[in-house]
Image 1: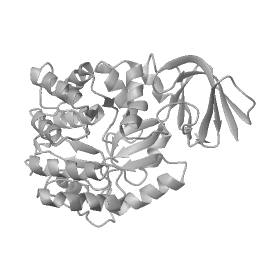
Image 2 (image 1 turned 30 degrees about the vertical axis):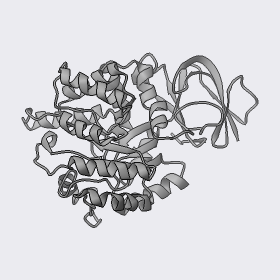
Image 3 (image 1 turned 45 degrees about the vertical axis):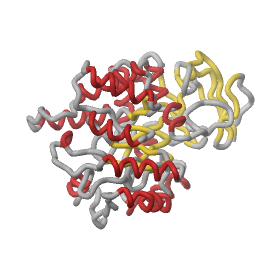
Length: 379
């Protein structure tokens, strides 16, 4: 079946086109430009067509992928999925067109007793109800790195996530991965052809990750006040090492709100610090990938990415830069060459919205239609 989206404003993942037609046939985009006869037409008048959105930091549970797709997120980059449910989520993403696509790190690497073990304990009786307590394979010695990476490959990991976190931002005191272990894991993953993404949320933890040679950071740092010269220096170092950074401002907004409710405002990790770090990264020219750290709680899958886009523009990105951070930029840095842009031959993962989000980013929430692999979703 051929579907023509006619007379639509286009943001193709990198640039805007005021008015054009886009043809979908099967699961692919077959033409951008002059319209041709089609089996079905969709009016694009007053609307903008976007590539399907990519959330570059999520945690998938049952129902997450369907929730994401309803909000125009057609791909989720999961940064730790419980092994008990990962296989079923991969199957759904592969076989069904009414859920978002999925890439996953599988099981993350952390120190014995390190983050996020304290959070997994808190999930007992909620999203883990009916599941055995998850077991995390800890890494405490550099010699364990090759075996850990082999186990992730057997698990089907698309990239490796390592955790360098002493707990301060969470109000805890946790064992943290040592620099030699981080370096060994990164080297073993690179030898196996995997990208490495580091969870590191203080400046000192980010320094360890950069020393290890990681490819990306799963968060901005949050312990330096806006305008701190150390933050600018860290951003410049990230640029020199060609490291990408996933933004997760919505996550830090959520935990800042929690700290306010509990009158615990002294912890590093405020949303103001996170926004300051992001501004330094943006000025330095570091590639920024929109991600939320979505869970079954907050930020929410799908909806959280639209809030992330708003926060990115509030922190200084243009609407087009924010849209690229949720489309072409994560596709490029995670090797997803078949999506993230609107061009002939690419997947027909598309979002049609009312209005013009290249001028007003909140228009991304005014979703008219979503296509995943060319399948128009029921709304």
